[in-house]
Length: 440
Image (cartoon, rainbow, N blue to C red; front, top):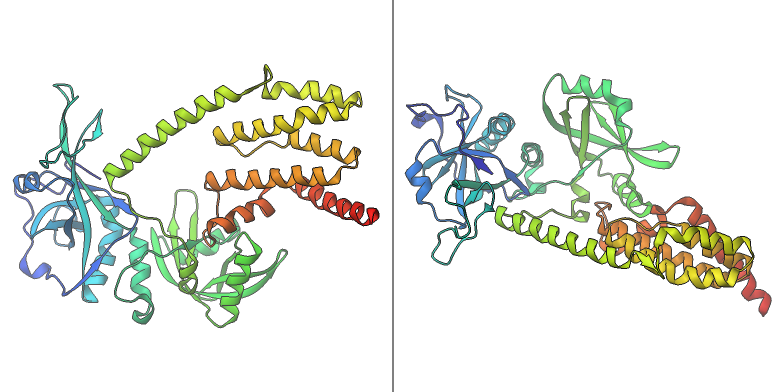
């Protein structure tokens, strides 16, 4: 988004680009990414900016201005040949070299944008059918400003795309999917040596099979220096990665980035790009609407959770002691009659408040079933817990970038639950089969 504070680009005599400084290349490269780029507007061509229609997609050209005396890293934003603003300095410093590189390859760098009006209290204002913002409900003193919502990407994404061979990247920009090698704390010295004081560095890397305590992994190398190992979360994903490298496709793109306390490494593997999910871009008005809807949904969920947090007159957590008393007294059937419906209420409550289910009630019921030699019911209870855990974990977004939703539920169901639950379930299944065999 944009603001209207003076970022140092404008003074009484705004910078006039010499004709020789920039010539728009022939080929269009649209940065149709997932990032909203911060901009500054409102100090040059104000009348033109104010005349732009609200909520309509506009074409913006990103133009480097290395000759700008206020900031040699400046990246101007032009609409129909009129400069209406700039990228914020922090982003422009990283973006300008990549835009220049794209220009040298014959691309003019373009982005989509929309103009909105907003106030401090109301946020983005709705747009009426006549194209003007709806200011109904605003106080008389509310200040309304115009904002430029610019769709783009991170500079390292553009740099990575430009590095790819033309036959691989094609004519249209796409955002790479980054994967993070593990145990990066162990490689900080090597990463710093490669970064050489730069803020960000994008380069090619080599991928080689390596052996770890967890089995095969894919080691990442830059200039023959080992910098970490890629190990996806599931066996299926790891096999895909290993199979890709084993087939001879051993190159990737690495980005090293300096943070205050460490150097971070991420890797893009073109051959696995088809397995990755893409984040879509959301315009500012839609993003605001989604946030407001999320707040309403949260309020509704909490209200529903409040309504069911009592079971037979007690708060859910207050049932622990009565159930323990029944268990110690050997009243297993009575305890189980309470536990089975209580488990359902607890599952619903925890899902509403956004937590994976606790295991206490399911574990108690499983222990009682084991004592009663009712292994089929024990398996049923444990499998239901695993299923509910996976559903909630998926809803919370704790996923993996390689797999689809059904696989993700299975991933959490098999690998996300505590190990003692998996062990108990495995044992219960064995006992159930033995009991079946004994009956025959």
